[in-house]
Length: 258
View 1: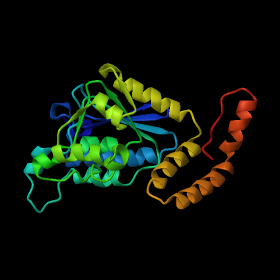
View 2: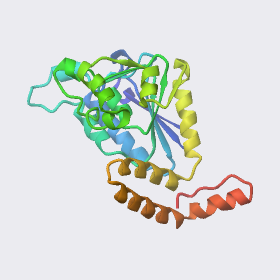
View 3: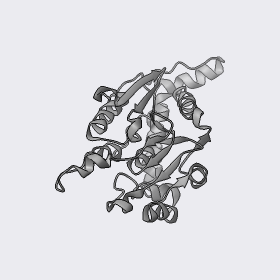
């Protein structure tokens, strides 16, 4: 498969879909794919026409199996493995809302890529695992940092210490997944959810995302201060005037992002 085809990019109105396209390798992430994904996310995040990003995998078996172990096995021990590029990518959240459409297994870095997203839609056949301890390494792309805050430390430790997978129903019960659908509907459901988000005021959406993620790391007084600052900034925007005006005039709002 040609390198240029390893990541597919398609726009559905204001929703940009990025598809990891290595189905024969369960969409495992090579250095090249990691770099392309990083560039594609950065481009989408700075494109004013893109309001939501959906990331998925091609084929029906896997969202992403994590780092490509064949590539990793061929590297010298002193070399930083390619999959760490994705770890660096997902460490700092981008401003644009992201949805993972998990169409199969999400293992290792694949699960950590989903953790970097704000929402997760998955098929009923999806499985989630952090098998790094079975390979003698750590789930250092977010599994150790983000997962405990999302599902609680005991559930996180079950995944991290056993390396064994959980199914879609369990992932939803734990709060790892927002929506479980039939496998064939995974991407469609994710794009529909993204479209509903994209229909809202972009400044308010981005500020809401940022505040939720930042306040989780702050003492409550600091979180409230940040809340008030964000509120004051958004209230001064043109969109904050457009929303009530459109409601009063019984029409759809025309957001400008200003």
